[in-house]
Amino acid sequence: MNHPLRCRCGTLKGYVSHPERVSRGVCYCKDCQAFAHFLGKTGDILDEMGGTDVIATLPKYLTFTQGFEALACMSLTEKGMLRWYARCCNTPIGNTPGDFRFSFVGLVHTCLEDPSRTLESSFGPVRMRVNTRNAKGRPKSMPISTVASVLRFSISLVHARLDGSYKRTPFFAPDRGTPVISPKVLTSSERDRVMNAV
Ligand SMILES: [Zn+2]
Ligand SMILES: [Zn+2]
Image (cartoon, rainbow, N blue to C red; front, side, top):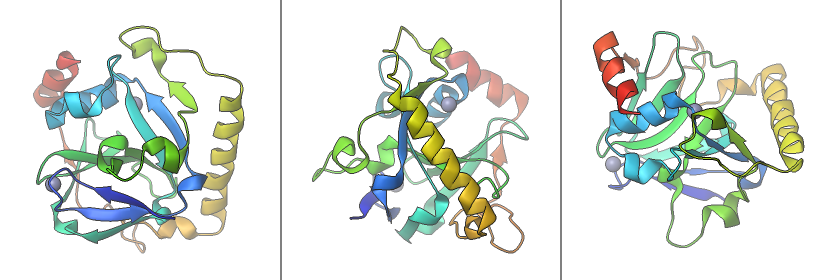
C-alpha cells in the first residue's frame, strides 16, 4: 500500500510506493540539523537529541501528485547534498546526492506524517542511528539487525544503477541528470548562520 506524502499546508502532495522496501534511520549530523534551522522548523523536524528521522528509499518510488511548483531545493555547500523542501510552508521533503546515478532519497519524516497511520506501521522501526557523535545526548546503540538493513538497502542502490532505473526520479531531468530546480547554495555567511545555530 502507498504511504501519503504531504507538506504541512497541503499544497504539495504525493505518495511513496513500496513502503516495505525502505530503510529507516535517524541522522544526527550537523548538516541535517542546519537544514532544520534553515527552514526555521527545528521543533517539527528534530528530536530532543537533534536527530532527524529519515526514510531512505529509491527516488523511483516517490511520486508527486500536486503542487510540484512549490518544490524548492537548497544546498549548504557547492558540492553538498541537495535538500528538497516545500517552499509554501518550509516543510522538508528529502535529501538526495547531487549525482542522480546514486539513486537515493532520504525522506524527512515531517512530510510523511499521516493521521490514519504511524510511521512505524508503514515503514517499520528505526533501524539505524548515524552520526551519533553530533547528537545532543547519547542515543541508544543499535542492534546487529542494523547491518542487515544497511546491506539490503545498499544492494538495491547498486541494482538501480545497473538497470538504469535511477533515471526515474522526480528530482532530476532524466536525459541530462540536472536537478529539476536549480539549488540555492548558501553563501558563506548564510551557512555560518545556520551552522552556528546547531
Ligand atoms: Zn506547504
Ligand atoms: Zn544528516
